Length: 190
Image 1 (cartoon, rainbow, N blue to C red):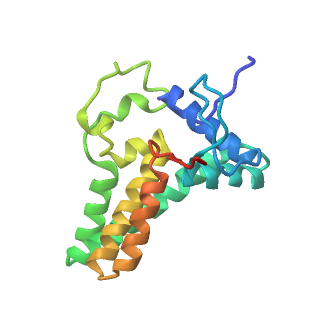
Image 2 (cartoon, rainbow, N blue to C red):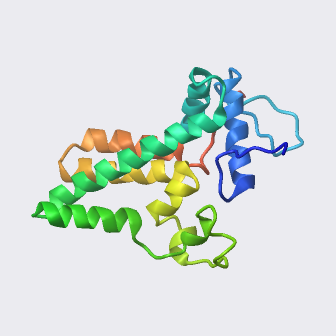
C-alpha cells in the first residue's frame, strides 16, 4: 500500500538521475542543470536522449515512466532490425540470420536471470562480466533502455558503414554520442 512500480528493476539511483533530467525537459527545459552539485548554476547541460523522452512525456500525459517504456520498446525493435540487417549483410542464409539474431539478443550468459521479477527471491544474485560491461542486450531490455538505444544506434552505424553510406554512419555515430547516458554536453556563456 502507498507504493508504485516506477518501471525499474535495478540501478534505481541511476534511473532516478535520468528521470530528473527528463523531468526538467518535460517541465519546459532545453538545457539541464546538474542536480548533483550544491553550487548555484543555470541550466547548461545537453543530452539529446533525455530531452527527446522528456518532451515525449508531455505527449504521454506527463508520465516519465511511460516515456521510458516507449524508449525501451522502440529500442528493442530498432536493435532487432539492425542486428538482422547486419546479419543479412554478412550471413548467407535466412536461418543463419535468424539464429544469430536470437543468439545476439538473448545470448551472452545467464547473469540477467536474477533481475527477472519474481526470480530474485529464488535465485541468489550473481554478477557476470557481460552484465556490467554493457554487452548483453536482453539484460538492458529489462533494465535500462538507454544502453539498448546506444547499442541499436551503434549497430545501425555499422550497417551504414558496410553499405557504404558514410554520411548516415557519421550522423548515427554523432547521435549515439549525444544519447549515451554518461554524456551531457555543457554550454557555458563566457
